[in-house]
Structure formats: structure tokens, C-alpha cells
Image 1 (cartoon, rainbow over the protein chains, first blue to last red):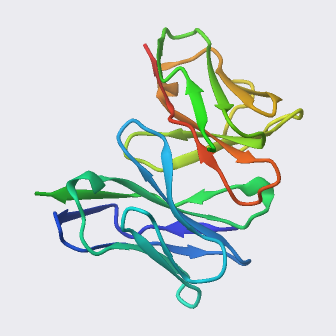
Image 2: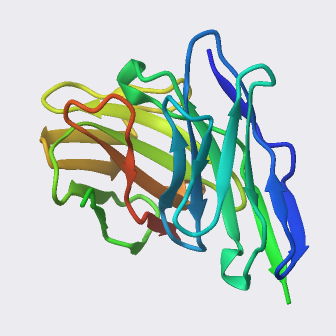
Length: 114
Length: 116
């Protein structure tokens, strides 16, 4: 069985400040890791994913996440946030089997203040 | 590419009636589709997994007779909430996995169901 823990339910931050959203997972097998973003009243959009290879993965809008196997973490970072980054962020894990089932963390609400 | 649509985006229905929500993969074929439920300020809860042409697999605690899922083709899955009650009010999100891809899910925009 897999589980995902997002330690912070809310992260308030000022515009242009750096931010880190934490994600830890547990699994007995190799996993694929994902970060999704959800804007109000919308579905989820894939932000970035780790499947294999380089442990540092980047998105097109400045976010990055690093897979750390020893710490079973996949923290999301951005060096300078914008007001438009305000949203709910979900970390998820899949073992690539079981019908591609995703296990989601509880979500972290990023609130960017001017 | 990899667009998933849901219809309707919002629906209000009276208690006791049934509501059907459609989930379509617009530009790919989806062997597997997933249905999630999301309560305000909470994470997504997987309700069921459906594979084209076979019965859906429901998660523990989800009533299969209340939440009817049909996956009749590789591009369409439907969720019917039967005899809806106010406690069924929620945000329902579907996702679809492309045929032959082991790790991708593409999400629909969600359907807001309000039962009065």
C-alpha cells in the first residue's frame, strides 16, 4: 500500500518570495511521483512528474521538484512566486500498476500575498 | 493533446432524482477511467476505476448501486448518481489513462453537483 503526506495544509507567502511545498511518501515498490495544481472550481492540471532518470524535474512555469529516495520525499519549490500561483497543490504517487491508480496527498493551499 | 472533458460542469437537482455525468477523452483512447469525489478544502477520494467493456471496481465504502458507472467505449465513461440526496452534493472529477501508457492520468475539469 502507498501513502502520501503533505505536511502543510496551508502555506502563506509574499509575492516574489521563495516557497517549498513538502511531500513525503511511503511505498514498498518503486514509484512514479507527480505534482498537480488545482485552481478554484477546476480539475487538476499536471505540474510535473518524476518517472526515472534525473531526480530534479522542472515545469514550464518555474516550479521544480526533487526526488529523494533516501528521504522518500518529492518537495516542490519555486524561487519566486507570483499572485497567480495561488492554488491548491496535490502530490501523488503511482506504482505504474494497479490500473495506474494514483494515491493523493491531502493537498497544500498556497496563498501568495501582495 | 490529452484533453478530458466533463459534462455538465454544474448541475442542480432535487432530492430523489438521478443525475448523469459524462467524461470524455477528446483526443486519445482511454483504457481506464477513474472517478473521484472531492469535498470542499479536501483531497480527491477515488470512488471507482472503470475499464472499457467491463464492470467498474469500486473503492471500499462506495455504494455501487448508488453510483452507477458505465464505460461503454474507449472515449466515454458515465457516472450516474441515483436517488440523489443532499449529502451527495460534491465536486466530481474524472480522469483517463491513455491506452498503453502505464503512468499517466489526465483529469477532467470537474462537475459541481448540488442536491436540494
